[in-house]
Length: 566
Image (cartoon, rainbow, N blue to C red; front, side, top):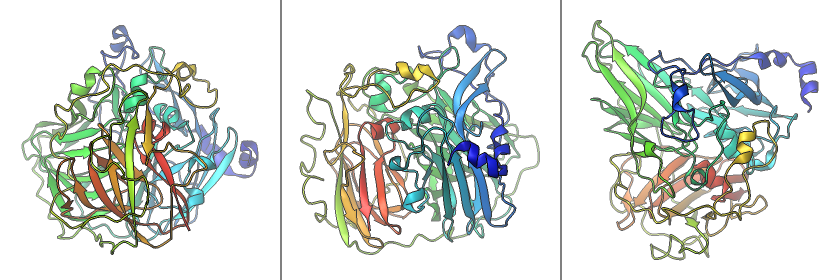
């Protein structure tokens, strides 16, 4: 359907006039692609009150139905009186929110106002395959596509949406295209009095003229990290609360490659939910590692001290950097400042003994091996000499050992397991055999000047992604167990479309299998170098489903594959 035809019979066209809110941005003084130091004084400082996510308007008048339109398009967003950022946004909004309830129907029409093809992927939502927004269902410039889904009972949780076109995802994510999807439960297990905040964490890198800076060779090798670290489009916002308040912080890591190692000064974090919704019992954490694509549902009882100042920040995490190392990797990155008021102390809130139910999946009917590797021509495969050299090459249904041996926690991000880890790629330059970045000829010419993709292949089972290749075949309703092996020197967040999985067991590089002490529904999970995980899942919908590294650049350089479920 052409855009003019759609607007001709629908009132949705009015929504296209949505404007962007002001973003509190500032740029690192240390990156050569950012605004020069002379411009920093013109940019707003941090410390502004935390703003809620801008909402996508529901245009339906029917109860239980959310109908709207999303238009990815170029927009200029004011950073200061002197500077605008030239981004690509849905409906002109930075990190917009769609909120529905279990049982509701979602009816979204995408109208592509970019100059390149795009899709709308509902990350974490097991929609029918035709509505997943996979790269083979791309929407051409000026065209539209309808996405529809009914959220069944048990689907409550914090999800998100972003583009997923073939060889164009990295460019579109770098320009700011992402939004949050919140599915409310029919009944919330949490008692009244808990103050909820949705936090979409993203990053951005701009040129002095406000254009998005081009990808560098290091971006392609490692996953792009922008120096502007944002929460709901703001730089270091402030949240003022009464002493003793119980906060529910619901987070999305919408960064392309940045890992968030989260700590809150002088406070314990209580994990109550993951990608797929609530876990059964609260899990106390000193810190949480949130990888690209992951979500977390946290409770914090704030200090009873009046006029206290506490920083939620991301601490350094060594994930195996290749090439020139940017200085910000070693810095503590502030996200959100929490200030307690000079007011009455709020009483503690008692949590229910059980937050939700995560029923364990039964014994698997199918077992598979998935191996993640990166290879640079002329250099040894990083998997050589580590673990099973045949993992993932041969029989994809090969059996595994006892998934219940040992005890460990694959969900908690405690400490830095890679401190002091070497970098076998330091100093390698970029090559040219992959060509230049992305399809199309967008209006933002900065990205057309991107560095050529380096000579590095990111592979699954020794193969780079191809649109017409199927790696596995499965059946609807069968329990599958995947042993995923990160046979490489760097971390990779592993994401599966079309379903959620349970982490059953984990095995570190030189260790033994350890059983997960508690279960959660996940769609994205991190694998440290040479780590193995056992994941169990059931595909409820037929179709071709992607699985890939959720470092966007690694996915685009080949670390993605397809399972066909019938």
